[in-house]
Length: 406
Image (cartoon, rainbow, N blue to C red; front, side):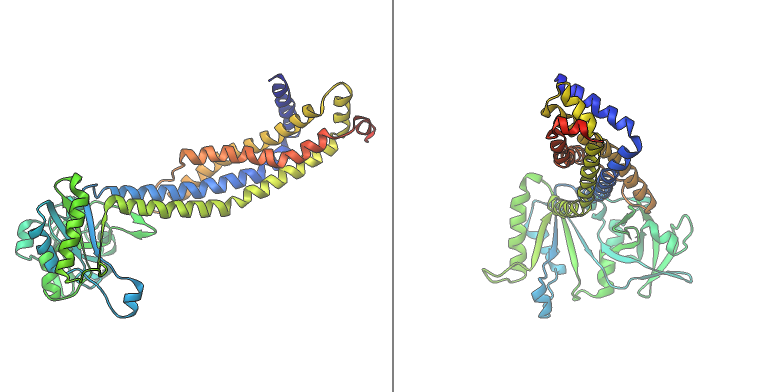
């Protein structure tokens, strides 16, 4: 322990004596760690935001969508869910609490006066807000009377107030799409942007209104979100839904399902896997800077050994052992690396937070604990790996030859 403390004291004294050189030596590590932390913090922040949105659907819901393989699409086959599927599920599965169908009746241009803007038109039922856990910030959501009467009413996203130049309070105003006029009865809570695209540029209309716009026999890309009465029956209900839909779609035994059934936690886990893969790949690419920084440390340490050859000879002449010299130079390399890692960690977090704030509605940067631990371990590892060669060279010096060195 005394050897370690003395070697650490000597290493710190050498670093203080050559502050500028020590900083420039650590610069490669600083840049490498800062780059890695910046990338990881941005990806993890985005991942957490998306995961929270999936979790917002609730653990007791299932999402049903049509399955379309690339090969089938190339052959011109396009699977869709049918309007009758909703009635089939309601009639045959008692464990379902509610079903929220979603489809677009077509058209993507909404108009207000002389202004027009892109908008996602969504036809759904009043249960949408409870199943999806998304609620209006102003006004109200679609009601049962709106659905029953296929009324021309709409709930809009916050973004459309800006793009259509609507009044600050747009309730009661009329917007137009597909040649129909719709009265605005509510404005949904703001959700911000995801992957640089706004999540608030949509118009929600009653499901029956949407059906009247496209016709009952139209083939539309519909998605169903099913909420359950009992979460413990999730697997059983999932199997039951599959059986009902196979029968409704007249699929032969052994034929592949033409639909997908996924729970909200499955969607979150799928995105987490994608996020983890991107984090590893991007971190690995940026981590090359750490390798460059390690080589820089080795070069400077080799120069330091040459400069301090006479000092090493004096130490050996008065009784210092080879392992004492080895320990001193190795600790000096590790201290330089770890100091660079700490500075890079702080700089990387500040850069990540700054970049996240500069991008409109981008999720806040998040630095996970494992990234902090990895930064310290990797920085120390770089010091050890690239400090061994200079330290070994110093330890092997012959004291007589070292004393003669000028």
